[in-house]
Length: 200
Image (cartoon, rainbow, N blue to C red; front, side, top):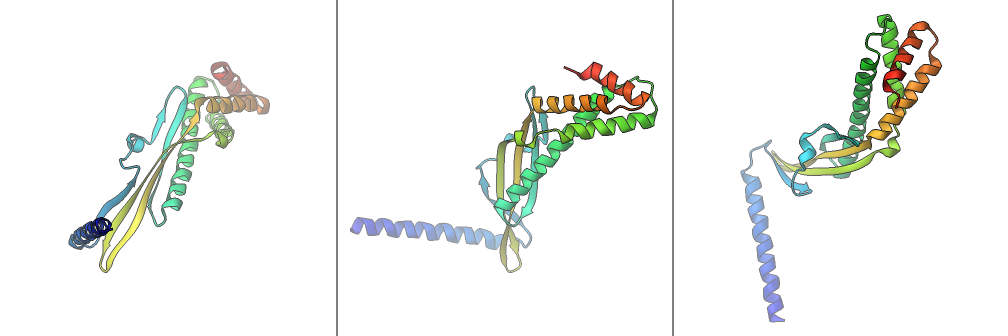
């Protein structure tokens, strides 16, 4: 019994000591100064500095949300931001591949522009959002010294991926649609060239 009381007293003393030390550190902070006080996980992941990565099998993108008042909401915003980046990455890749595929086709600039706008939009529209897979999350809680105390906010990051195969299927759908909907000579020439270069 006595041993238990002694142990309990020691734990209380340690807790008070840590609390006092923490309060002293905060008191020494200047107004507006910030400090990360919590991280989940404990260390920032390596992918934090990689906004976009393409492997043989996956597109991987990072999303982020800064200075959120609620950690859970902030993390959801980071995931939504990652989805936006994923769609943009698909559009960039589609523009690059379709532009290269139809290079040299003798059509007007206007026809080329309309064609590229259409196939890029069709490719991004056909990406299956259900195929997006979470690859990682990171959240940090930041303390800010204010004139009358402290306040906290969260910085959140999320990494998502989608299989390259999903992109390839979406591209195939865009190729087929461009062929089916081609109505003038320029559109038909572009669709045929792209199909020749990009069809699997």
